[in-house]
Image 1 (tube, each protein chain N blue to C red):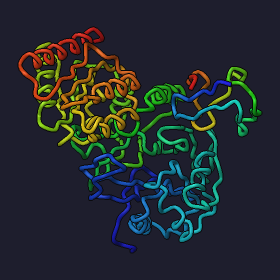
Image 2 (cartoon, rainbow over the protein chains, first blue to last red):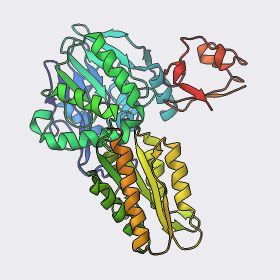
Image 3 (cartoon, rainbow over the protein chains, first blue to last red):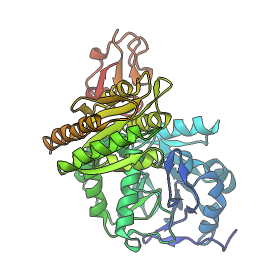
Image 4 (cartoon, rainbow over the protein chains, first blue to last red):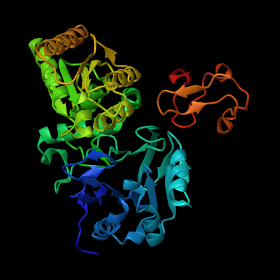
Length: 400
Length: 52
């Protein structure tokens, strides 16, 4: 495949040799409407080093890009910063094809790769603070466990002041441009926030600690090279500040009203609650699970201060699309939220109590009395929904 | 004996098993783990754990 795909220069010694997946739309349940990239990087040091690989079907694209610079068999070392298959899927085949001298990963990475590939490749485990000598350059490792897998680590190329940050600071965005300054900043912020909300949110506390730690290490960064989306070479301060803000999850005057509906009764309730919230000056995002995707709800929750959830009762349970999004959100562990539950029902009406239970498990502070009503709401019932909106708004405003 | 769950990754410390990789013998209650003991899965410190 030599000659078709080209490498892109990132710094004095580093080239992007990844793959562009223009068509992926579902990334393990996260809607990736702009596609993605799997970034691998080639370090042309005395000892040529490949940082991460790509998802299995894209192996030839990566090898072709490498071939635009060197014979892939000249790669002496591979570093796996993150074992997830979109970065390691082609690792065993690449090792077979090019026969590197050494493959490095974190201790947990070595373990995980073994469990993924049965048997995994032979790995030299590296620890936090270790470095390897690339002849004329040095690559240092920083463990970033649970950001976002136990194996995750960063690699720092000292001479080029370049951080290989695996999934951190990345986003699902397919583009022919490789750098942040070549892409509309509004798109970068939207896709970066969506990625954070759907992948990194549960580990916000660790991110805050990591940002502090990195500051303390005194590293200088000219370039941040993540495993998805564009390379940061211009606005590094901006992406650090965004990560800090997103990880803090400081509530804003915004409520997400997420609901499912069968015959529009729960939807009428949602509209009345939204009007109550708006009357108190709260910005509202209404999300019907008939049309919204769970990952869009995660994005909206990132800067919200309230989560109001409604569902009808279907065969003694909350509506399936509501269970989907609530379990998804629960796993993402958003914090600092107030909320409420509501729903219409035909005869048994279990959904509201089920939602309340889940919201409590998510540590959402319930504001006001949940509203549960039979069949189609009348104007009085809609007034109680409007009041619930006001109650939630006031509880939220007390926290701002 | 009380099991403790890691608030970061969900690993459960079970005193009946201890933490063989961290040289903690079976039968060690959570309270008796050294202060610098960390979660064997994600490296979280003891204060990230809560009773299961």
